[in-house]
Amino acid sequence: MTTVIAQILPLAIAVALSTVPIIATILILLSDAKPLVSIALLIGWACGMAIILTALTIGVALIPAATPARNDTTVGVIRIVLGTALLIYSIGKWRTRSKGPSAAPRWMDALGRITSGGAFGFGAALALRPKNIVLSFAGAIVIGDASLPMGDVFIVVLIFTLIGVSTVAAPIIGHFSAPEKTKQPLDATRNWIVRSGSSLMLAVALMVSAIIIGSGIAIL
Image (cartoon, rainbow, N blue to C red):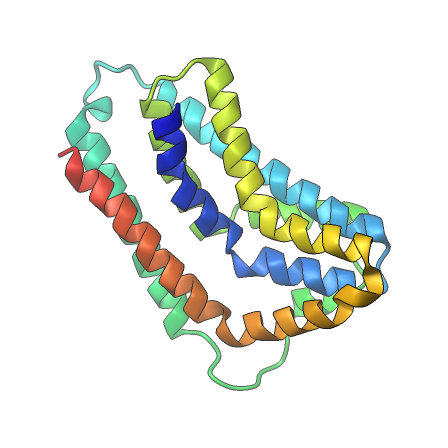
């Protein structure tokens, strides 16, 4: 299990550094929304992430080990394809980023008025973004291919999820602990992410893509 955890760590970190959930959380915390709204977003994001990873892991594990789909060559090729897809998607998002001042997306304006139910659904929907699906699929291949006992699978999925949601949980915990003291740091963080988030995500994607592609080449 230790080896599996080590392999999924960079994938979970890449999920944690997703800018949209972080910005959404900060915008809700800086708005007049009720405190429970940010918690609902966190729970939705965690549930969506855990459900997708679990479903994909079960799907991989259900493929018989003797079939061609589970041999090293196929698994290696799939990892290379996933790593390449993540890289191409991230470069595409970076190339189409806004290079100057632009109007805020509608979803940002709506977050200040969102309800707890809406925040939960929004958080769960974030787990369906293409980058998260690719990272979850890569994680599912690692977990499913390891043939771990059910208890160990639960622990690995839990670790992946906790790391993935950590960057959303941290500002919520900080804001609840000291609401007034965190307003300025949260606003500064939001502005920094808006300016530099695309470059950060590209750097993370390059690292994670290299790891996924390298792990695929290693088992060919």
